[in-house]
Length: 144
Image 1 (cartoon, rainbow, N blue to C red):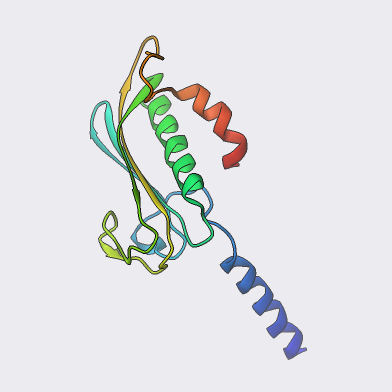
Image 2 (cartoon, rainbow, N blue to C red):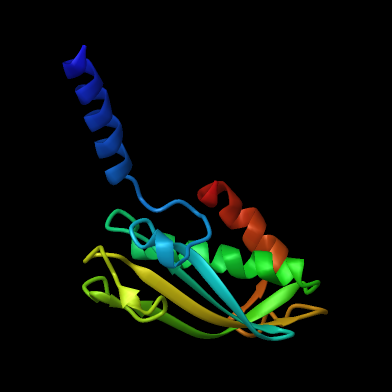
């Protein structure tokens, strides 16, 4: 019986270790699994960071950051946002500068974007302008 309990514990522990980071809020206690953190700079400016783990691809981290940007935009009463700056931190960066703590996973991918949020018609002529509802629609099936 003890061997069965031990095997079940090992199975569940190892299965948790081999999953990519889910879309969730992260904080300084969440150093192992990552997640998103957002900071409002002013009424229509925010910085969003998503840090994954070893199994989170750079594209997945970017998608999560964009999805969070769309959520923030809609929740703030705006309908589109413009990405003013985007950074992908290298996976071998042992120090996560956003969290200001050592990154416990050597290969953690991080995507950081700064956005400005607006009301009105989306200026589709700008390559970095995004309709928040379209982002939610298109990335929602990937996120959840």
